[in-house]
Structure formats: C-alpha cells, structure tokens
Figure 1: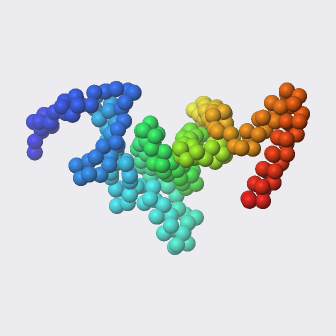
Figure 2: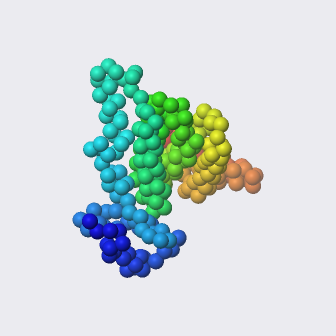
Length: 260
C-alpha cells in the first residue's frame, strides 16, 4: 500500500486555472461523464457538489439519502401497525443532522448562482427533515436541535419561490408567497435560544423589505394606473376629470368581475 506521502497528486494547475475570488466563487461545470456539477472555489481548494441527489453523491443505506431511508422505515412501521413505536435514536439523529448540513451548504451556493428551482427543492427537503426529526426523535434535545434554524430556512425557501414568480412577472404571487412565510415565522413556537431569536428577527425584516421592494417596483395594473390618476385629479380639484376616471374604474372592475 502506498503511503500518503508517496502519492503524487498536485492540484496547483487546477487551482491556478480558477483563481480565488470571493465575488465569483461558485460555478456550474460538467463532470468527466458529462453530468452537471456545482463547484465552489475556496481560498485553498475547490469543493464539488452533485447538483441532484445527495450533495456528496453517496447513497447511505442504499438509498438516495439517509432521510429517504428512515422515512421508508416509518412507512414499513405503519404498514405493520408499529408506527407508534417508531423513533430516531441519538446516532440516527446525528446522521440526519450531518446530512442536512450537506444540503444546507448546497442550497446556499445554489442561491448564490440564482438556481431558484433547486434552492426551493433543497430547502423544502430540509424543512421536511426538521419536521421528521421533531416528530420522531426519542430525545428532547434532538427534537429541538434544528428548531433554532427554522425561521432562516423558511425565509430562504420563500425567497427562492418568490424569485421564480418574479422572473415570470407574477408580482402578486411573489408577494403572497413572502407574506405567507412572514405569517409562518410570526406564529412559530418560541424557542429559548439566541440564534432562534436573531434568525426570526432577521428573517422577518428581510422578508418585509422584499415585499416593500416588490410593491415599489412592480408595474401597475390598468386599474392601479387609473386610481393613481384619480388621486391626482382630486388633488388638483379637476372634478370633471375625476368623475370620468371613476366611471372608467367602475367599468373596468365590473368587466374583470364578470370575466373572473
């Protein structure tokens, strides 16, 4: 067996071909077999993630992920009438926590390259992990371990989903998504943890700012444009013009209601 010192592998050429730049440190590339991968340039190396499946490409317990494996175990327990006895012990929770961290790092980088669809997928997957552990971990400390991060992951999931809607110019849908996330975070059970309190505060602030930004910059509908002109006419005491605008707004709303 060769010793570690005798193996001649020098990554200098690879690293020199992609100098470290914190403003441009994530890229999508092609693997040797043509599959698309995600690479992250660090100051002293390069990380590589699978874009689909488990981020490290491993298949724990012969499944795509450890979470899939344990969820399948729960399904079997239910089929056998033993769902009430299904629990996750400490070691199993650690396995799930470690796996969740892999998905966390990947969705951070996916967010950076604006791959919103995969960011939604990975954040939704980790929300499922949070719920699964909270419901089935045998130890209270494990059940609560991830809850301090719930405001943050709800925020990331909502922003990614909203960005998909904004790209499709569905401004109202984007605002609805963000406002729904705000409501979810506001009613989360209190966790006596500084991280939870900070993430809840930061997440609510970020989401409210996003709503304000979308509302400020989105194009006005025809009704909104007419209502804006109506306010201007009233302010200028141009009451004849204001009456005409009110009639047009009334007609437009009646037509929209009939079509809807």
